[in-house]
Length: 218
Length: 187
Image 1 (cartoon, each protein chain N blue to C red):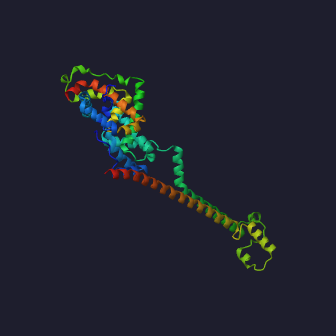
Image 2 (cartoon, each protein chain N blue to C red):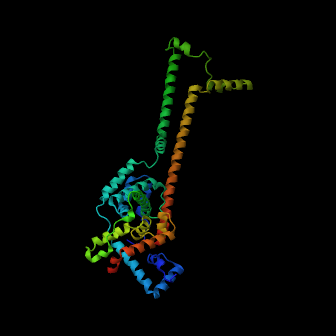
Image 3 (cartoon, rainbow over the protein chains, first blue to last red):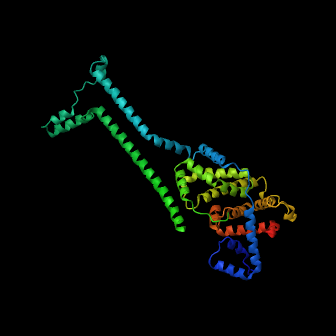
């Protein structure tokens, strides 16, 4: 230790010293010509480095930006499986709509075939395909039964269930599918909205974090 | 050049927010704004224009890929410079396997500045002297002298302690003062 402050001169020149250390270096420089000379050398070195020109012949800015843009397009920012999942997620409503349309088409077709068979348009096929069951008990029939015993009531409920409800199997399934598809769509919509809100809140939070200190420093 | 970095401007924050949502045009504007600074820093590190541009492009690509996780506590440019510095140091490490970067041939300081064409020649000598520094010290010096980062920011950029920043900087300056002594005398 020679008492000089050589090792702190660089930090002093860079404005990185504070408190007691700064006072110590300042006090030393006030009476040490050698350290003052070294500080001047450091300042001269800084000037020399700054004066060294940057290289020339770089790609023009527009071309550089375009090159980066091209590479952005070629390189996925997310893994392939995540992108596939993302696309699937965005197409979910279309999938639900397609499912609903398909189910409706199936029910419409089967309804048309059954109607044709019942009208006798199917010939011998009607006898083979249509079950020989008593006519279905409709909702109106049930409502018209005002005086029934408990056993009769249970029997009627059982019969209704066996027939697929008061509206019949076709209508029950149809309503059931509609409810399931509707619920799935609303779940998707709620999830999409929640994700969007979360993303916007994140961005707002980040901006607020930076704007606060920058406003304070002005 | 040596001035302290300022926080991102309001419109830059908006650009960052848009780019974070996937807007490539907004990101392109960020690239346009910071291209020169980032390329120059990398150029000072590796001394090769093509390498500098490649590393800078790579840095912007990585920045795009990691943009959703970027929190603008530090200026965007410092963040990209950090990525670019790591890219450049990776390149230099690979390069050192085939040639010793620290063995860059320097013109003899004994030639004296009076024998050379002032300006261009001196700039070239300075550039060569910087390139002759060990990569670790060179990175610290470039980030301090050309990018104007504070010791803390350099430490964060290179993942080293502040004390190491100071010692590497002292070492780099000490070597440069020896190598460039003739030029320092005439200043």
